[in-house]
Length: 179
Length: 132
Ligand SMILES: [Zn+2]
Image (tube, rainbow over the protein chains, first blue to last red):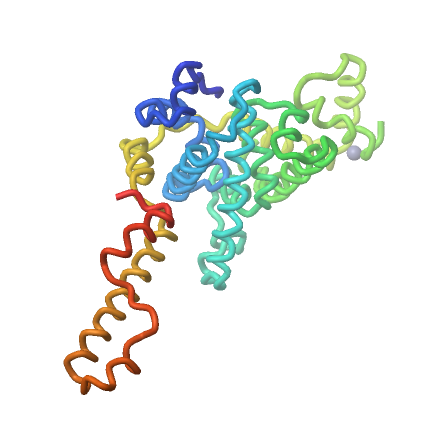
């Protein structure tokens, strides 16, 4: 999924034109919401994060260098914002969960493999979630993910591998039901 | 091909990016090794689940809510403004109370050194980024 941004909309939005910024936000809305959903797997959190990302875009649009392609720049703004947002959320939610509700607790895990995987992704470190979102939402290559996240290519490979390993381990005990 | 070796090619194997002989070598190992066969199946399941996650539609009105948030100061600034306004009201109130309840000669000692009055808030708020 790759959003299409008309040049004229971008140019006018950079000059502070509200209507153009709205058009820009609308052009980016579905992409941003899907990216946010894959960082949260929760519709309410995804909406909150989408709003944060688009507000951050508005605040930073003046710093965007129009000589550079827009989407890679926006991806960096969005993923930075998402990682900060997840950190703040983690700090707010450090209170111990009710063990009955905590994910991964035997007996509380859903039997639906798709739901188990969703829970497993929710439990991954935010950096792994970002890699997975960029890789599987947009089919981005490892090099593009690395330049978005400003980390070495090897780090992205390691994160993607560990993420899939962790998901696979969560799924494995239930493989006989999936085939 | 050993249990460790084939894993080095796992991603390309899952992506279907391996040469035919390399793929055949891995398939031979998986056919003989129950543990690796289960492992490869789990990896394939995870890969296809990740790749097949449907795109979802944003909730109705989300663009409106984003634009509405652009039109008001950030929550941090709103708290700050409320604090400034409360402090100003308190100072003005203190001054008035002092004027009423205190003998004239004590007013100077009660009155705070700096008195914020409503008209002086304008430039302060503007400096704080507030746009009425
Ligand atoms: Zn083996």
